[in-house]
Length: 117
Image (tube, rainbow, N blue to C red; front, top):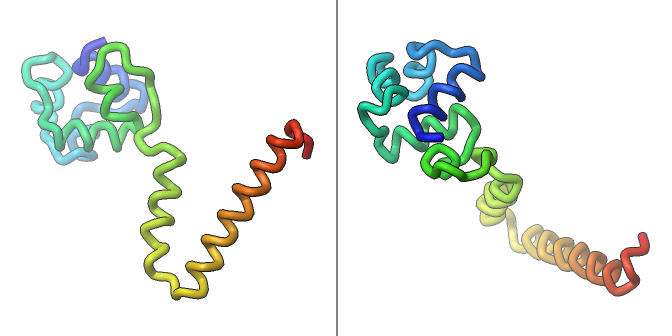
């Protein structure tokens, strides 16, 4: 499915008009119409905004046979928390590191024990 078809299908899934989608991504309805009719290709910035409002990955929009995946993966949530890590004091940072090490050790021991809880 081409980008134009995916944009139209995703918009219809949400029950949005072209005007509503345009408002959500900062574009006018005529521009959305041109995207959906394949007359113009959205800029990289517009693709990113479309992916975000539809909660799908950019590659899903751009690659014909790409699987539908969420805009942000669960791993992104960890990245957001790691960005906050720098705000912690040295003692708290050490605590976080030790906790992670303990969880990794626990997981490895479980694997060695054959997955027994």
